[in-house]
Amino acid sequence: MNENRKAGLASLFLNSKVEVVLVDNHNLNLYVLEDHPLHEGYEYLSDVHKADYLRTYFMHHYGGGYSDIKPCSWDWNPYFDALYNSEAYGIGAPEDEYELSVTPKQRPWLGQHWDKLMSNDLYIFKPYTSFTTEWYNNLLSIMDSKLEKLKIHPAKFSREAADTYITQYPIEWGEILLEIFHPLCYNYTNELIKTMPYPITVNYR
Image (cartoon, rainbow, N blue to C red; front, side, top):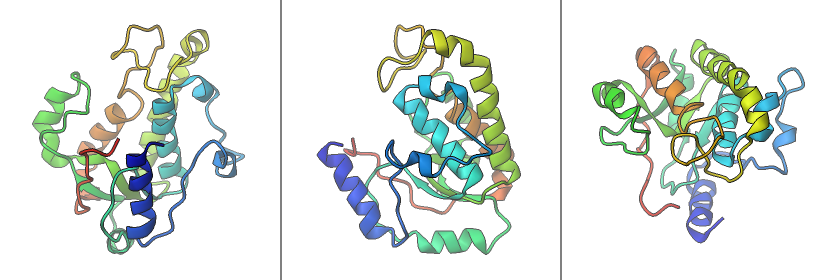
């Protein structure tokens, strides 16, 4: 990690007031469930898409909190309490109307429905809800459909994506996360709490 990322991670450990675990290649095997192994195509994904896959896997099978490695200045405990004292499926930050990290294909739809959506940068979910089940199953369906192409054209670098580089790698930037997550937020908007602070997205890389 560069210094900005290290500072962001340190702020999560210091300020979130909850147990923080950094999942990486050294400890991932401790969390992969015997009955739910990683998809065969996982090993062929770019690093960005591996991270997308894993947050879906963790939110469905484990629940709990997820955060990008970005600066954190708040206590997460009130948000855990708010979720688990409610009937909601998840809690997160409201989506930003001017969010530009999504792909051009998503922006028109996001622009129409942003007020019903949740940011993908950080959240807390209960496991095995209808939301996470659809999220996970949609991911697996796409992985199944892309498997043979992934075997032939695995990712060669960390941020590779079919719509942002000239490549034969078959998965687009938001295809296995944002393009699944945002429509689900729209469909389940009444089962989501959108009161977490919006993450810091300036000078965090």
